[in-house]
Length: 408
Ligand SMILES: Nc1ncnc2c1ncn2[C@@H]1O[C@H](COP(=O)(O)OP(=O)(O)OP(=O)(O)O)[C@@H](O)[C@H]1O
Ligand SMILES: [Mg+2]
Image (cartoon, rainbow, N blue to C red):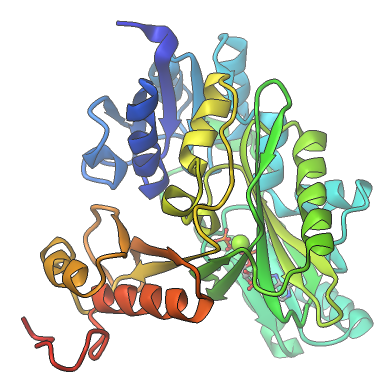
């Protein structure tokens, strides 16, 4: 076995699954640390270890023999990552960078020090303190847990004093994707706190995706417009419509600077909110392939998954150009249709140009179970086709032409 080519991936979601497709082409061998034997990536990666990513011995055993370790999610406790590094495993991105994607209070403080535009914010320690922040900055405000949130869980819009208790009540309960008993590593992980932020009346959300190699070289994808509902990404359009070249360059330069300052290796996604005056502020950072970059599988010359793995494996990064003038990605969120594979015949008959990724997950309401990408010349056409194709996979009536029988 050639250990030098084994890359460990912690977390068995769809991001790890899509990394596997890229790994095959690069001749890299993935080893997966998964939450269960039947999670999305475990169904695609033969070398899967089922275990708890918060248990130091489990993670240490998993990583032994891996040339590098990377992530499907950002929830691995920092002390475990330090232990891996001490054992000689390359952790990419490393713990010092990753903490900015793990902890929104740390992220805000660092970005403020780097003079990166952010919403007004501060850590608040009680409902009364949150109310005081809102009185000073103006209602409504946003409250977030500093750690453990995902897909909008752990984000609250606070409209009045009566709502200020809820985020603090949630701190007492379990957060994050896995509810589990505490382990030794938890003792070294800071407790989540509540970060209060100015409510940004954004006109749209944008995402800047860059990839930084182990040697410091950075490549950047065109900036995407993203549509989030209830904290979940529904759709991306690339390039972001109406974003002029000068603002695009400024956003890419900002994301590139953040990647360098934080020492990221791999994908850095910078989620942005665009203000009515055209200015942008950073919402948050992710240091792994990101939902707003799924369009790159079909719409860019190198996918974010391949470029992430190239960075992690120490290879030069690939070109990020678009394959067509417009690329739209539409998430498939679990709906009434449960057999997605069984729907492909009709889907591809109606939409031969639809590019589909299915995550091998059981369909549950609202769950991310796949995505569709369409690219072409005309924004309205491409957007309509991507939406109709994902609507069809979600089981929405009328998504295909009326002449087709939806019940089949
Ligand atoms: N300060 C703000 N003002 C207005 N809206 C905000 C603000 N912060 C966040 N939001 C909205 O809430 C969404 C979720 O926020 P955020 O990205 O911080 O949460 P998350 O749960 O960590 O999401 P993710 O799934 O991206 O990890 C944002 O995409 C945006 O739509
Ligand atoms: Mg987010």
